[in-house]
Length: 260
Image (tube, rainbow, N blue to C red; front, side, top):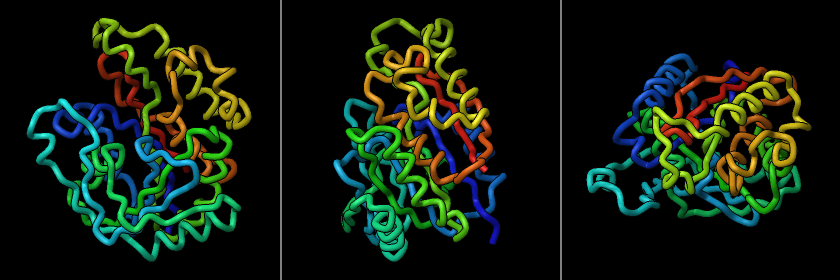
């Protein structure tokens, strides 16, 4: 069995499920280029906890964790099967890394998980295990969590972090658009790409101080933290490939990263 890469995907607005645009095209192309995974472990920016939680539901529900969107969005479901045995394996790996995990036997898939998964694997026929991130513990903790998951890549499991390369929802009211891009977006995504290409893990973990416009790009950093899960899962000397999926509304960078 070939070793799978790990992925970081920008999931964007829930409306990406109805209007996939360039993001949908890029995710479909990526899925076609990958070996079919046996299962998926998904770290979403929309499951936050104080300690790592591992979802072990046999049939995870589709969580519509948003409001005020068109009715058809609430009719969408992603009925992928869960994987309780894999969840136990994930919890064991995290426990070995002294990360004090817990298992949640009822957790479903929030939109940070099911929206991109519908675009990657629309048949919903691959087992999915969701895991939480810990925003109070910062990038180094998320990187360690990813490192603990790295052995799964040799077992046919695709590890995915789902967030957004830039995520400042205050800018909804700033008048940005496809024709008028927020000035902080490109410098920030260029810095992330450069540091990933250089393998500068120390700078990336310290992005809050070192990256240009870091606090503007991420007033809170839960949407960037899944990047560090994917980066850690890639192991040492990983090669990062940026896949440009555009910039939604002028301020949500939709970059995807593949780590081999």
